[in-house]
Amino acid sequence: MTSQSQGIHQLLQAEKRAKDKLEEAKKILHLLFLKRKDWDCFWKRKAIEASQGGSNGRN
Image 1 (tube, rainbow, N blue to C red):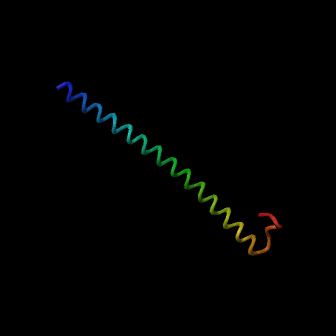
Image 2 (tube, rainbow, N blue to C red):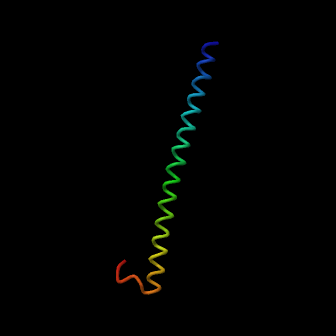
């Protein structure tokens, strides 16, 4: 019975590690999404400035 208990304990530990890794991945994806959103906004703003002639010669 002890080997079965050890197996259950190992499975629970593996499940916890998997959940922790999933949470870490979600945080990373969230940060990437925020950066991408900021980057997209930057380029949209640049396109608007260029169409209005307000870029002052800067790229």
